[in-house]
Each structure stands twice: as C-alpha cells, then as structure tokens.
Length: 410
Image (cartoon, rainbow, N blue to C red; front, side, top):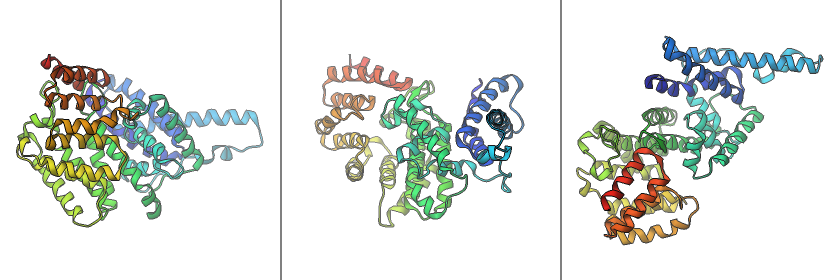
C-alpha cells in the first residue's frame, strides 16, 4: 500500500475508534470493527483511490460491521429465549444519538476513557497505547520491558474490564480527570518515544506517532493550561522533536547527537520548548517531565556538542533518579557522569543494571557499555559489545549503526 495511505490510516484510526465508541458504547466491539474497516481500506484504497472523506468512510464501514454483529447476536439470543425483547438485548450497544458537536476531539476523549480507574495504571497505559497510539503489542511490550505474550494478556484483560465497568464516552469530571492525568501523560510520553526512536523496522523514526503525541499534548494543555507537568511534557516533546531532521542521513542512517548538523535543528520549536520549561520551572514544585525538558534544553541550547553543560545534565539526572526507579534514567545518568568524570565512572554506575531484569538484555545498556569502553580505550571489548547490542535491537538503522561501530573498531 502506498505510504501516504498507510500514514493516513494510522492518523485516522484513533479518531475513527473514538467516534465509533461514542456512537455504540462498546469499546471492545468498536475496536474490532475499526480494525476490520482499516483492513478493508488497506485493500480497496490502493485500487479505487482514497475517498473524499476518508474518516467518514471508515466510520461507516465500522458501523456496518457492528450492525452486522448486533444482528447476529440478536438472532442468536432470540433463538435461546423468546422472552427477551430486542431493545433489552441490545443494551449498552445501542447506537447513541449523533453528537451535536461533530468536530469534537474524539481522540482526546478516547485517551481519557482508556485511562479509566477500573484499570491498573499499567493496563490503562497499555490499552491506550494500543487504541490511541496504534502501537503493536510487540512495541508496547518493548516499551514496558516485558514479553509480548504478557502484554497481550494485559491488553485483553483491560478491554474486558472497560466493558464490565460500563465506562461512558464523555470528558471526565475535574476529579476524574485529575485521577487519570498521570496515566494520560505517560501514554503520550511513550507514544512520542516510539515515534522518535522506533523500536523496530526499517525507519529510525515514525513521524506520524511523534506528531500525534505532540498534537494531543497541546490539546491536554488547552484543557489544563496551569498544569506544570503538562507544559513540561509538551516542552520535552518539542525540544526533542526539534532535532528530528538531523538524526538521520539522506539514506536513513542513524546520526548520533554529537555528530548532528545543528543548523538542521528546528529553532522555532526549540524557542517554544525553552520558553515553556523556563516558565514552569519558576513556579516551584518540579516534576519529572520538567526535569527531562530541562535536560533537553541543555542539549538544544549548546551551539556545539563540546559546549554541552554536562555537569548540569548529570545533576538533573540525579534528581530524576531520586523521583523514579527507572533503569533508563540511571543509564542516561551514567552517560552524563562519564562525560564529566570519565568513562570508568560511567561504567561503574552501569554495573548494577547488568543484573536488573528490566534492562539486562536491552540493546541500549549494551550499546552504552560499548560506547564507554571505546572512550576508555578498550577497543576490543567495545567492538564485541557493539556486535552484541546489534543482535538485541529490532531497529534496522540502529543495528546497522552498531555493526558499523564494531567494524571500525576491528
């Protein structure tokens, strides 16, 4: 299928799912119907062309699928008992009246609905990544550092709990919104990360995902303009995404941060991101997204790689480490410490991570160890670790980069 149609379907999927859930009220049935509609589009659009209103087309096809399912279910139940009327049989699946606001942000509503309190935080985030972000189960499992089968079970249970909870498709109250906000922000963070550095495939980046995460972060900020962590997350996304054009060569090869052409960085995004984080940091209480945005600002404001304020970055990662038991933060802090105190200091900080089951077999840990051994002059050890890291990643650009590093070291 042509790439433009593929990207269009990915962008429309959460919007269509939101509209169908709003109309029919059953999340699980709606998701199945939308997936079928997307498959039909993937088959028909390359030959017949994209419809004038592709969103409406997908909603109509999905609605037909649900209607067919309802008729089948009604017929089955009628055969089982003649005492139940059609209205009772349909129950919560009956189509709701069309919204008086057809342009309402269904994707944003879907985002908050998936983060329902009936779900655990992990399950809510996983379900939302699937429904709103369009990530595969394998991609979500990679983000959570768990096996794919474990994540598949998690998502299935989450769908069942949403159905049993009778969750309504509406913007939550202030109290409900506050209870779900942390999960919503974490979902957007993970969607952006998968878009900025794809966990697998031929492309290093998936711009559709990172752009959608930024769009939704802006929408959440419009709802909560005074929330400093919402602003911090948006700032982090902008400051990170600003480097996108410089991260790959014309052939799609990975270019590390210290080798990037900084004239390609988006200065408008950097200015907006710096202004956002500067304004939020001045308000007192500081959260993890604000700290990460401040780190991104340190990188973006350095005119050259050698001008980067690594002591400040190391200090900020130290604060982050106190807030979260996340091994990726320790990994990044080790890199920053190595830039300040030398590679041996960084390697020492990495040692405990080799026994952490969440990261022990992750390619990033092995790649960072290789990088620090290279900095320390241990070229043979570095080469072996680069080769090992290349076998642990599903991203082709990352694999090629790591193999190239290994080859150059001999």
